[in-house]
Image (cartoon, rainbow, N blue to C red; front, side, top):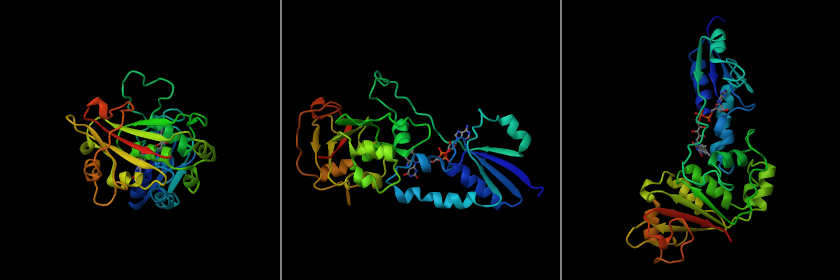
Length: 278
Ligand SMILES: Cc1cc2nc3c(=O)[nH]c(=O)nc-3n(C[C@H](O)[C@H](O)[C@H](O)COP(=O)(O)OP(=O)(O)OC[C@H]3O[C@@H](n4cnc5c(N)ncnc54)[C@H](O)[C@@H]3O)c2cc1C
């Protein structure tokens, strides 16, 4: 075969679908290199273990890697084991699809204090990422705070809130399951810097929070003049899309002493959403 030889760096969905497109072009041999021993990037090590349907995309990715024109080479870190210049001597082209592995730091005081972690660390731990420290998390605190209101924040809040026996049906690693089973966490607070209209999670992810058995969702209503907290009648599902409308459709406001963050007493217009389990 005298076709092109292409190296794709990274075996996440971007890298694997790039390999598929290249191999479909015909007369192209593709090597997919990854620093990890196993392929699929964040599909394997990021998508939450209880999102079984989403994780099953690995079936489609595996089919691509099984194409005779495509090879997967794990345990090869470009930049450490081999340089870009070296790759260029073996391949006609190099495609970089290395994802976004680095955290964005908040730059707030206390960010590095004990008990403060990035979502990347927590997600890597519960996903069994080879880089993760096995005993980094003990979950002995009763109240966890998740900063951010995107889908990753929802994943983290959900994993912290779900009971271990529910997680047992997933591919969550055994050592994580043991910690979840012994978890002391009874309250998880998600903090967003702006109101619900700016939240980045999808309705589907939000809805899932309301479906966790044995847990309760409390959503602070974000108004600066008369802050209040309303509890949805059952769960934030169905007609309720954005959290603000869920708040508005719930029963009359119920005030409680602020527990830190942007509670009712602070008069601040930020949103806070708590999931609690008994
Ligand atoms: C916590 C979390 C949950 C998510 N949940 C969902 C979800 O439910 N649904 C959804 O659609 N998306 C979800 N995503 C997003 C999705 O996982 C990413 O959009 C997708 O994986 C990005 O694909 P990628 O190929 O660009 O990068 P990645 O999946 O990150 O893959 C990059 C690959 O490059 C490798 N690599 C990096 N540097 C090197 C190097 N120097 N040499 C060799 N290899 C290298 C890495 O090991 C990795 O395997 C989630 C993301 C996170 C973080």
